[in-house]
Length: 446
Ligand SMILES: Nc1nc2c(ncn2[C@@H]2O[C@H](COP(=O)(O)OP(=O)(O)OP(=O)(O)O)[C@@H](O)[C@H]2O)c(=O)[nH]1
Ligand SMILES: [Mg+2]
Image (cartoon, rainbow, N blue to C red; front, side, top):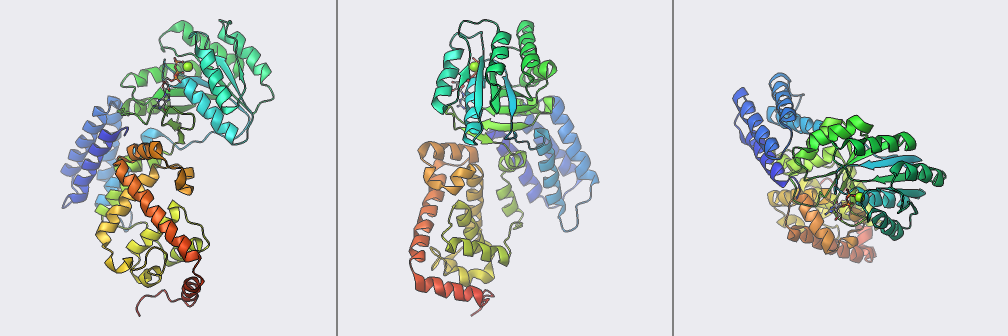
């Protein structure tokens, strides 16, 4: 998994806090050093690391924990927030008329990502046109044509033309009635002044509202200065990190993001055109830190469901709506809701399970499931059938678990789903459960 090493070292640092008998200045300084080491080893820019850890120390030593929050939780929260800050705010590209220019170094994934974005907008029902403005690599035009053909999106280009601005000017006119026009440009080193002039000229003509920097997650320390140079040339508005399915350190990319202040909008997670995930900084950092585990560690069930939520979930399941989300909620109820056991014992797939349940084991399992589900797309959560072996591997990597554990989750889901089906066919059982819910027989006891 990308950033796996970083995640592990950060989690170790947080565990020190969780396990400490008390939180004092010395501990905070030590943990701050641990975080520094972890970030530096992952190629995050030195200045950025020092700024971040200085801020963690300052806040941890000066801020009072809010009411009801333990000091150790507060420090963990600060570390989490400062890491999220490095990644910037959450941003999504609007589903509206716009022109997008893709820029970046050689081979980072610009052309592939152009195709992924085109597919994304096309699937959302927008009219998309692609402009092939890479005039420097001979096969560039053909590569984009093939992509356009695959997803059914028209492309504009001219294999013979050697001037990118000529193509872009004609392309913009050609696609004037399209909703989204995406311009694929050639790879360039940010220090090649003629190539930098070329993207400035292209930007001048196309006036793209989005200038997206495409950045391979494995780019190391040089990512920062490169991003800066592109930013100086055309103003980077968003970043897409590619090859997040690989085994990159990823820290260089974090530096780049911080340097341009442009948020990451998507991450590329494979070579295929559907391998594009939207990016949420908070979720990303939570996953990196294994927040699920940490919460268990702190013995704090923040997400304990209320009875109302439990009822809601139960009703949903009974109406036949059973995706991974419902299964997770169901398991969570079992783990956290003592008084509801009786009702839950009647739920499909749960018969006879409630007595045997080992809360600690189950919470551990839930934490793993949560991390795995965080690595899934919304589509996969809704329709787990689509999770075939390549997706299993991607999800396992994303979650930093063994593919076996992903299959275990899917197996559990299939079992539960089957049970739900059987249950739906059993009117007597259903009526019984309904009656119990209505009579408010949820208070436990006999
Ligand atoms: N595994 C993986 N491979 C990717 C991803 N994005 C792109 N690639 C691969 O990276 C290689 C380069 O991708 P391109 O899209 O051609 O990169 P480019 O930036 O357009 O390259 P130039 O035009 O030569 O500068 C190809 O082999 C892609 O399949 C990704 O998210 N994951
Ligand atoms: Mg290309």
